[in-house]
Image (cartoon, rainbow, N blue to C red):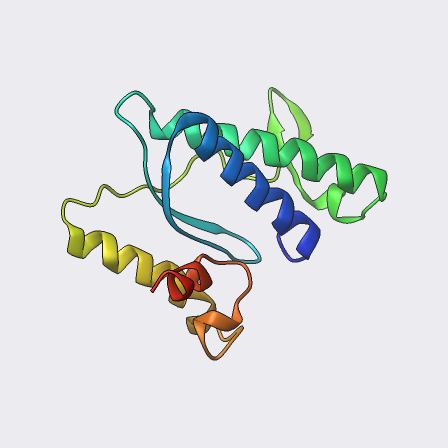
Length: 141
């Protein structure tokens, strides 16, 4: 689902907008072909579940619209059973979150995000993966 640049661009725009709207600090991110990692700090007033739900819902609406317009065969494979009917679905119903208790843990999660494309063999160096925040870290020293 996230294997082409258009869908990745939709997702990055949605993440950026949700974080901006809700004043969430996005520390790191990486978009892989079949999953996403985010390291973020939401303000006290923002619950993680609704934030992730918003990102999933808005990105799914845009991506599904694109798939329908292009008559993509992928659309038929992206379905799940809901209330006895098959409905289009891009995301798993829940997310897997971790609360980091110290700066070292946060750094580990950021490094994990950035090294994910390297571990998977997509690139040799994290800076070669366009769909992560690694380059921002390089630019900001």
